[in-house]
Image 1 (cartoon, rainbow, N blue to C red):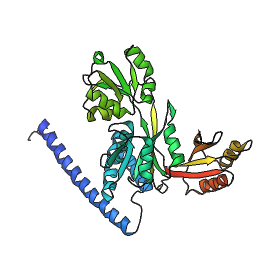
Image 2 (cartoon, rainbow, N blue to C red):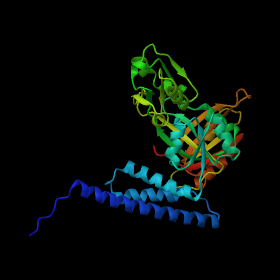
Image 3 (cartoon, rainbow, N blue to C red):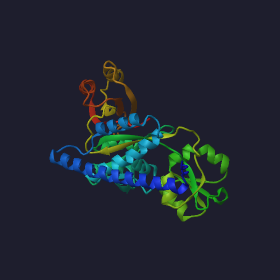
Image 4 (tube, rainbow, N blue to C red):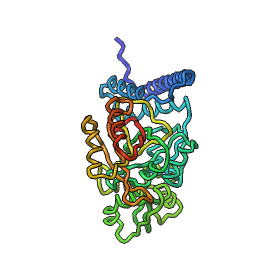
Length: 361
């Protein structure tokens, strides 16, 4: 009886090559199907983005996987595939706080994948302007950080500009100290945006005592400064390391673990319900005692779950505040719609900022 031949490294690599070729063929087939769907949606005047359908795909894949392939990696791979196929139906442009490699840029890539067109803006407010005026379809803006709290320029821009929230992304923030050489001894100045500097204050004090820190416009600007000057180190995103050809001095220098920034995707129209949604409102209260309590009671009586409430003063109107309210559910849900109609009748100002798929916690 002939002895079975043992597989060699070359044999296994040949198998992998064959599998890769099959995967590539299937990816091309999927892309063609996506383009056909895009044509049908255009013909029937349907939205290109269907959040419910995408969530159903992810749920099915996770069930079929049965935990064999690492789940987070599986979701990441198929997110890139699905996004690329969707963008083949219609390419989108996304505005973000630039320059390249800021955390806003990284959030955009996480949300849309690498296939979208990204437009860096000088300020968060500029991102709102681009979307409101239709120069880009979407913008991505930070709204709150788990350590430093609300991003006030974003909240103020929602008051000023007519846009809708289309989605959200909770991005774990890992701060990297980067420079030309990767050596701590070469650092004469540390630069970054104010929030990362605040989030890494204790690490810097311990490891770089006496080294000055300078607040700059964004982490992308900081990375560019580090690229241009060997004595400067930046606190920046992982994307900055590749973009600006920098070396890592230290990873994860944030003082508190679990640091997360919530980003909002803004556009002109909110998507249809996905089944796992949030709704955001901007409301002004009547000038009378108990007005806030009465407003919240309207939602509580309907068992509407609030996830966030934040107040901001109205510019040029001392003593007047508007409240940002996030709740679970979609405006297409009967209970949300009824609650909001009742709330609107009892408020001096009411604006629906959007209903959108919830981000992963």
